[in-house]
Length: 401
Image 1 (cartoon, rainbow, N blue to C red):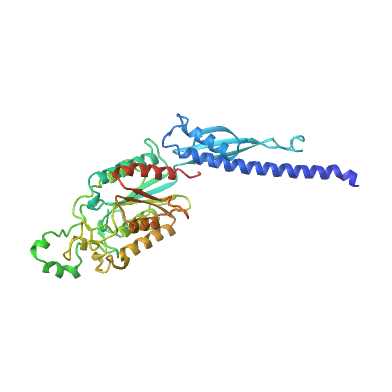
Image 2: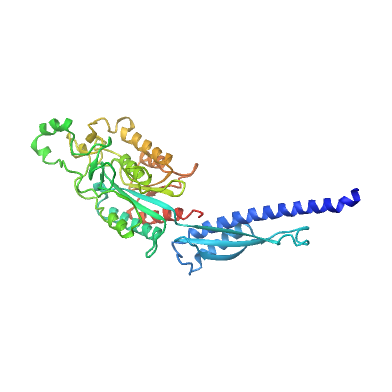
């Protein structure tokens, strides 16, 4: 009986071993091909039509590094805009199934990666200290990244928006439930200095009153809802000048409205489901989150002042200053957490000279992986800004499709 069954038992065992080898080889190959596709996608900004061999070389190097026995058989432009598709194969050592003709002795794996299914909002500090070369460099870098995400003559499944902030944010007429204009932290319309503080305003000597601009809204660019219209996006980016009467740098308002634009619920409904889209906020600022009570070169020593037209004073609050680390800093971290809870990745860029407190706050706001600062960037000079945006762009290509 044993003698009769032995060939059958050996055959079953052989097939089981062969199937295990096929499974293990395919698993290793798929991981290698995934890594290769991701590595190739990061080079798409420099080889968008795969004609230079840069993408292919990156793929071959990464596949070989992960599985030396693998052979890349195909590298092609993907069906998605700005994507690459990779196919590879590897031989499997078979004991029995190959002899019996039950299986091929090679396995194949396929992967695609690239820049698609993205929703990106630029949240940019437009306070007066950004005017001139800094804001010009930010616009240039933002447009270059938009070119990468939405190449000319294509219609990728990618959308871009903008929030330009100072002490508040200005909305257009496309925010549901809000008229066009600037808004306070509590959602009320900003009309300059709150009525509760106007007695203080009129009590100031004329010399100081003449230095206060009650309208610090009209020079602030309007927020742009998520759009696929490249011309409209670039036109919106170019409205930023960082000139006109300022009202401080209130970063939590920039984060809050960027979150509203990226989530599909009103007041902005252009965003897709977070399960379908990778949602990105790129936050750039050159200052503390402040209202003019923190000292520094832009402090106003008379009260009220232009800063009292910001989103917090506009809500009737006068407790959002810098004491005890500041309500504004606490609110900034709280708004960042709300964005992360909504499935939004935050990249932060700290431009100019920064103290350790500012740097640590921006690192806390960023969505960096544990033990890293991969979503935080320091740009000491205006000329560092384009390179930082390129580095972020490369990370946006790190996505399997």
